[in-house]
Image (cartoon, rainbow, N blue to C red; front, side, top):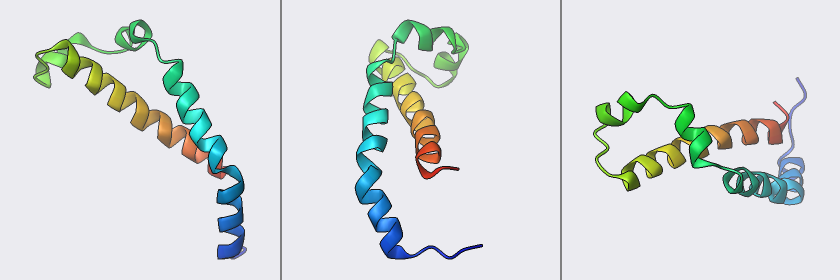
Length: 79
C-alpha cells in the first residue's frame, strides 16, 4: 500500500471540502417529512418516548443527517 503524504491529503481536502458540504446541504434540502415517515416504524417513537412533534422531527432529522453524512463522506473519500 502506498503511504499517503500529509501535503497530498491537505491539498485534497482544501480542493474538495466544498463538494462534501454542498452534498450535505443538498441532501437536507431535498428531505421530505412524508417520505421519511413512511420508512419509520411508528412504535419506535413510543419506545423512544417521543411525546411531541418537535421530538419526532428532531429524531428523524438527526438520524437522516447522521446516516447521510456517513454515505457522503465515504463517497467523498472514494471508499
